[in-house]
Length: 291
Image (tube, rainbow, N blue to C red; front, side, top):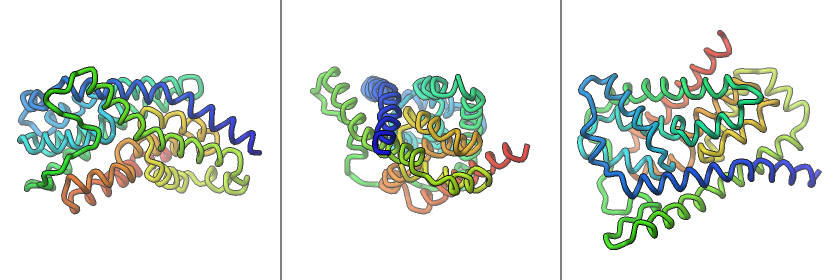
C-alpha cells in the first residue's frame, strides 16, 4: 500500500514540477521588465471591451498566484476599472500559455474536451465576474498600507536584473512547491485508500462531486501550472465535469489567495468576489451536466 502511494505521488509530483518551474521563471521576467503603467494605456471605455482587454492581458502575463493580486491592486490604484483588474486577475492563472500548455499535455490523450472547456469557461467566467464586480463596486475597494504587498516582489533599485529574476523565481517556486506536494499526496492517498463505497458516492452524484472538488481545489491551493496533473489523476474517479470545476476554481481562488486578497482588498469586496466565483463556476458546471 505504501509503495503504491509513493509511486503515484512521485509520478504526479515530477510530471508537474517542470511546468511549475517554467511558470516561475516567466513570472519573474514579466515582474522585472514590464511596467504596470503600460496596462493603463490600452483600456477601452466600454465595460465589456474593457473586461475583454483584462482577459487579453491575462493571456500574456503568466504571473504567479501571489503576484497577480498585488498587480491588480496597483492597476486599480492607478485608475484602471475594477472590472478590468478582476477579469485579468481571474483569467491569467487559467489562460496564460504556460497553463494552457500544461493542461493540454495532461489531458490531450485522455480527454481533450477538458482543455477546451477550461479555456472557454475560464474566459467567459472571468468576463462575467469582472463585469459584475465592476457594477457592484464603484467606491474604493483596496486597503491603504505601507507594507510590502507580496513577499515575492523585489524592487531594490540597485539590484541587477539577473539576480532579481533568480530571487523571484526561487521565491515563487519554493513558496508554491509545498502546495504541489500536499496536493499530490492527497491525490495519491485518494487513489490508493479511498473506499469503493466513497468513490461510488461521488461518481454517482454529479452535483455532489462538483461541490466536493470545488472545496478540494480551494483547500489544497495548488499552482495552476500544476493542478492539471492532479486533475488528471482524479479523472477516472470523479468524471469530466467535476474535474472541470476543480480546474476552474483553484486558479481563481484558494486559501492562499484568500489571505493575500484580504491583505490587499476590503473584506466585503473579497467576500463578494469569492461568493461569485463559487456560484458562477457551479452554475456553469451544472449546465454542462444538464446539457
